[in-house]
Amino acid sequence: MKKIAIELKWGIIFFAAILLWTVFEKSIGLHDERIDRHHILTNFFAIPAIIIYVLALLDKRKWQGGVMSWTEGFLAGLVIAVIVSLLSPVGQYLTHVYLSPDYFTNIIAYTVEQETMTQEAAEQFFNLNSYIKQSMIGAIRMGAVTAAVVAFFTKKQ
Image (cartoon, rainbow, N blue to C red):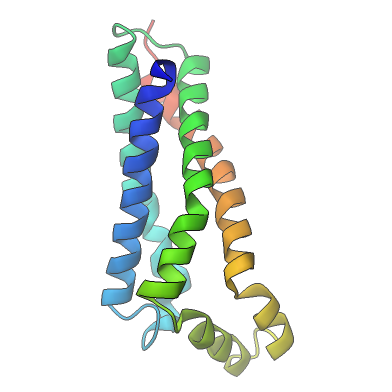
């Protein structure tokens, strides 16, 4: 457990940042009256996500005595992504049951109104089970890409 203590710490920090970002989105109306902008503005979470990964891998490098290969950095970042992925069902549940219980109703209505999806397709895509799966897979995919890039810049021999 001590071997991944840094990754566990930063995985929890990343998860907390996701929850804070979600509260921010809700507070500025991206889950209801400004839902038309949600798909664009939610991507700005990439900025704090990258910052967190940089800080995490720098922390890992420091913990290793100031030396870290790209592979070590990438693997550390991948472990963080797995931790975030494992926590993401809890985040989705908290978000869609407590913080923003009308989100799915709102986004389904919006996509149907915009003729982006049929009612049936929207209901299949925008629901808690679907979002849990998407968030778990997305955490691994984006975490791996971010880890690969950040590890390149934080490696030190």
